[in-house]
Amino acid sequence: MKFTIVGGGPAGLWFGLLAKKRDPKLDVEVIERNPAGATFGFGVVFSRKTTDILKGCDETAFRMAEERLQTWDDVDVVHRGTKISVGGNHFAGVARLAWLQVLQERARAVGVALRFEQNVPDADALRRLKGECDVLVGADGVASLVRETWKEDFEPTLDARRNRYIWLGTRRKFGGLTLIFKSGRAGLYMAHAYRFSADTSTFIAELPETTWRAAGLDAADEATTLQHLEEVFADDLGGERLISNRSRWIQFLLVKCKRWVHENVVILGDAAHTAHFSIGSGTKLAMEDSIALHESFARFAAHSKEPRDVLSHFERTRKPVVDAYQESAFSSTLWFENAAEKLALEPVPFAYDCMTRSGRIDLEKLRRRDPAFVASYEAWRARR
Image 1 (cartoon, rainbow, N blue to C red):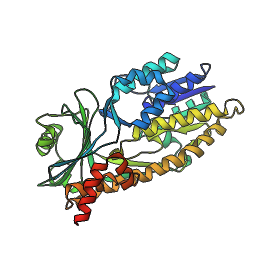
Image 2: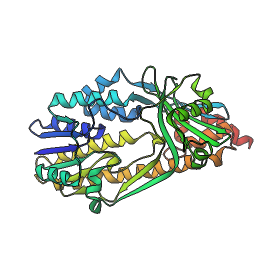
Image 3: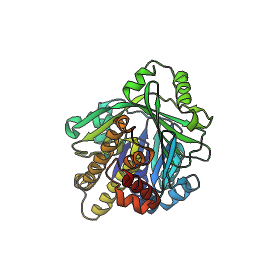
Image 4: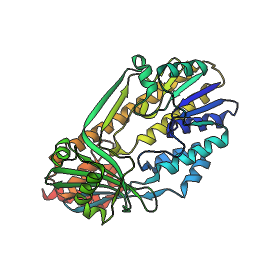
């Protein structure tokens, strides 16, 4: 059986690795248009539950990455210049490029053919690839050519959300996952920051459209943008500069698809669905898609030779899980889009509202994670 995977990001590499490791006789290739060392963004973040899942799938890859992981327990919410820390959250950050390098090395080691700088230029080229393999896996990201080639079958909806954001880095070493809220002359500024290496953190600035335009950032060049944000977040950056990596202001694109399978074609990760960066789960969901697809093939290997049966099982079992996660992520999206309405809250209730924004965490879950924080919140509520 031949698998052709379009897209050399975490989803494509992880599925290729797992499939080839399970059955070395499989012909597995990954086609990626960029060079092996190219990447966008800075760091990715996983929960402890996710790292345990990944470790269970391929302990060697996890061991290779383990020394590069930055771990923390706290979520720090900074509001009105006051930092409220909420513990017991158990996250790990790693440089996106470092994680890709681990996956590339492991995929090569088990015999996956990695074809970098090989562009699939158009829909006709994809249709030829579809006919030359048993399964075509579209792991080609949010702007997926695979999804758009068969969009009548996948039926995607693409929703560009209201806020503007820019993905940056900084040498400021944040202690935990840090959510910063500041009021400036132009309006509300927000930032999501977390450490992903020993000396570098991701720093995502998120602004309402009104703030972005009032500050003149809609017309600013890169240098002006960085300078402006460094001034706004000067106290939080501790004198450190912001770093760009082909960074630009964009709107979060919410991708949903009615179906993920068409004949022998399947889409994974951001090609099929996106989850707002405020819950830090894009890479997690993509790699868990790959695990679910791999497990479907493993389950059917002994008694079905029809890829369509396997792909249908994958979609039937995995899609409801992702749909539920997208609902929670959308609640978080809306919270950040309307965060200006919450600014009148004092720091402790503001942090509580922020922590419970997606509906996945409630008062009792917070109590188990950090009873001292909940006690301070309940004391505030009692005073009210």
